Amino acid sequence: MSERRFWDAIGQVEALEDIEPDPTLVDRAARLDRASQGINFYTPTFKAFQSSEVSVCGKNAWPAVSITGAKCKLQCDHCKAKILEPMIPAETPEALWELANRLIEHEGAKGMLLTGGSNHRNEVEYAPFLDTIRRIKDRYPAFRFAVHTALMSDDDAQALEQAGVDVAMMDVIGAQETITQVYHLKRSVDDFEAALAALVKTNMKVVPHIVAGLHFGEMLGEWNALEMVRRHRPDALVLVVVNPIYSNPRRPFRTPDPEAVGDYMMALGEGLPDLPLLLGCARPAGEVKLRLDTYAVLAGFSGIAHPADGMVELAVRLGKEVKVTPSCCSITIGEEVLGDEESDASFTVDIQRLMEEKAVARRGRPLGIPVVAEMK
Image (cartoon, helix red, strand yellow):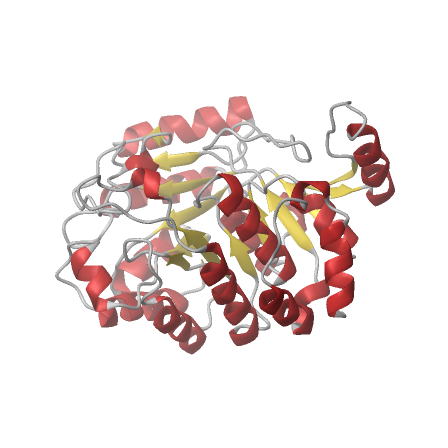
């Protein structure tokens, strides 16, 4: 796709009229083979979300659940356990069993993101919950578990697989300074790579995360993390971006430079040309988010959680097939890799109607996303 066509598409999106993307990044995006691929916009339900283009939200369809509630012993400087606070607590196996039954039978849940706070070795202690996960899977075979694993051994990874976990996720950190100074861990980069290697040996779908700006808002170990992912070939990759609002005021983070992150997005597209890439829901708000989302669309990312205004229109104007899915992007990409269309509750977009409603919206009427079909 020509660079001129990219600029034409950007220029037609009203939400982008006050920003000018980096011309070098637009040029790189135009040269990526994945630039014309389809895109899925995700609306995970553990955050409130609404935009002028996307208002579909499958309430309780894919809840996020923490086995430690809001507690985390690690207390990393970039998070301080704040990301756990809006999640549903299930701090005992019995609580998880009761919660799953209620969500499935009364609220139509199709799966859950299961996570929890780490111990001092960056391990989430799932062992007491494995029999319950297996029990839930045996009773509800179609129910999906996406689990944030943190660090684990080969035996731990195999235990998750045997329990019936569908999708495994972990943060991949490529700089020892970040592990020591931000995570306060006495672990090594090799430990993170070994955990990724352990996961990809299983039959679970593996969707690691790379956190851009993890070193106090600076890019440091991300390039090494990319090489780790290239060596072990998971099923997809989620990029998230540090949000300074969660950081410790005594060790503040700067907001990552969106152009530096955009450069990294292009590198991901170039270095992992056949791997689904997703922009996760954790990232700064405002203009930074708008820039980040724009670069992700241009770079041919397969999905974006909680898209900024204008992203649906930009994707449409670039000729992409657009869907909206009310779930965690990691769960859904796992299903897509499995080829399990029965559990994919995506919505396709009526492109012509979107353009017409955009025109109406500019004259002062509210705009909602046009949906023509629900993919069951």
